Image 1 (cartoon, rainbow, N blue to C red):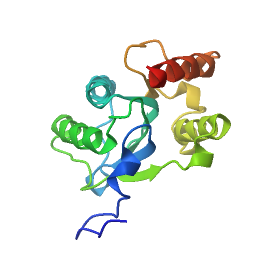
Image 2: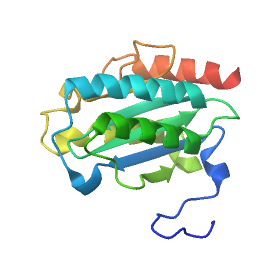
Image 3: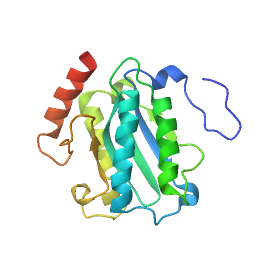
Image 4: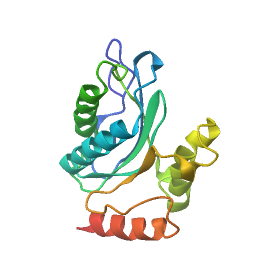
Length: 179
């Protein structure tokens, strides 16, 4: 593990965030401030996320925008995918849209281990993320929460609420990583 920089959370070696890595990112709003989450922000967030994903050759299997933080489950699609570059770009752009609020200095990450990458375990992790609003009593169920979804560049109809979502997701994902 690289030495800890003053004022920063420790990170794994850069290689853990590259290639086909799968990382759960959590970004909190500075001082856990609320009042920024709206349909307008959600649309701008999706547009910004899409550009960040394309630039770094990634997809987002799930995201949830909570009143004071956000979760994103990001997957590499190519050997040259780089989640640290993605994260830097995304955070810079999100801070512009969040102004006068800002993201905390550094997001938290969890790089999924091999056993967490198994399809069944991965789908459970994805649903756990999507269920955050229901656990927080923001929605009676995760399907009814409007500030969550999936973003896979080139596939605008992906939606984890759809019964055929995982079948389609894995078919497209496997095709992309084999290209």
